Amino acid sequence: MLPNRLQLPGLAVTAAAVGLAIVAAGYVALSSLVIGVILGASLVNLAGPAGMSTSVLEPGLTYASKQLLRAGIVLLGFRLSFDEVRSLGIDGASAVVIVVAATFLGIQLLARLMGLRPGLGLLVATGYAICGASAVAAMQPLSDADEEETAYAIGLVTLCGTLSILVLPALGNLMNLSVETFGTWVGAGVHDVGQVTATATAFDDDSLATATLVKLTRVVLLAPMVALVGITVRRRANRSDVAMVGTPPPLLPLFVALFIVAIAIRATGRLSEDQLDSIKDVERIFLTAGMFGLGAGVRFARLRRLGGRPLALGLASWVVVAGLALVAALATT
Image 1 (cartoon, helix red, strand yellow):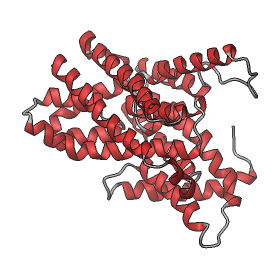
Image 2 (image 1 turned 90 degrees about the vertical axis):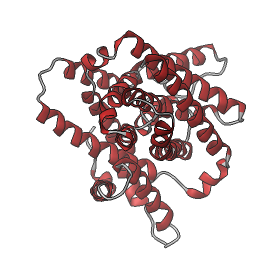
Image 3 (image 1 turned 90 degrees about the horizontal axis):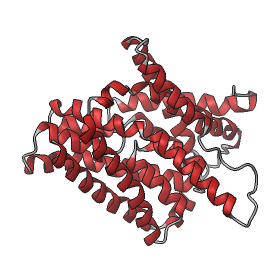
C-alpha cells in the first residue's frame, strides 16, 4: 500500500533518520536498526518537553512501523539458502530446532512465573529464539503487546546481544573452544544477525562461517513459528465464549507468507550476488525505517510502569539461551 499525503511529513523525517542511523552504524558498535529505535524514541520523548508537537508526523511514523518494517522482513528472506541449511546436516539442524523450541517455550514459561503479560513474554521469547528485533516485529501482530512492551522486547534483545559480544568470546577463550564449536554456540545462542557477526569475529574470523550458517537456520524457523502461533491464537478464539472484536488474526500474516516466497526465489539460484547485495541494502533501509517508527511509539513515562521484572526476564533468558546453545554446540561439533 502506497503512502498518502498525510504520511509524507513523517516519512520525510523517517528518511532522514534512516540516513543518520546508517552513517552512525559505521562509527559505533550498534546496528542501524538499534540506532533507529533510539532515534525514534528520542524524537517523541525530547520533542514533547520542548513544546514541539509530533502529531503531524504520526501518520508517516505509523506507516514506517508497519508497512516498511514488514517489507524489510520480506526482503530478509532473500538472505536464506536452503542449500546452506542442508549442509548443516541432520544432527546440526536438529540441535538448532531443539534450542529454538526450548528457548521459545521456556522464556514464555519464565515470563508467566514472573507475573508478566503473555504478550511481552511471547515477543521476548520470539526475539531470543529466532533473530532479534526482526522476529519481534514479525510476531507483534499476533500478540496483545502494546508499543511499550514491543519496544522493551527489542531493547532486551539489543542489551543481551551486546553483552554476548563482550562476554562470549572471553568465555570461549577461557574454555578453549574450537573455532567450529564457538561458531555453532554463537549462531545458536546470539539473537540478531549483526550481533552474531560481531561476536564470532571478536573470537576468530574463521568462526564466522559456522556462526552465520547456524544463525540463518534459526531464521528459517521464523515462518513456521509465526504460523503455529497464529493457529494457536485462532483456536483459543474459537474456544472462547466471548466473541472476538474485529477480524481474528490470519494463520500466517501476508508479509510472512511473502518472506517464504522470497526464500523460494533465492533457492532458484537465479539471483546474482550483486542483486542479492542490492536487496540486502534495501532490506536494511526498510528495517531501519520500521524500527524508527516503532521507537517513535515509545513513551518513557509509560515504559517505566513496566518496572524491573522485564529486565530480570531478559537477563535470565540470556543465560538460559547461552547455556542451551553451548550444550548443543559441544554435542554436535
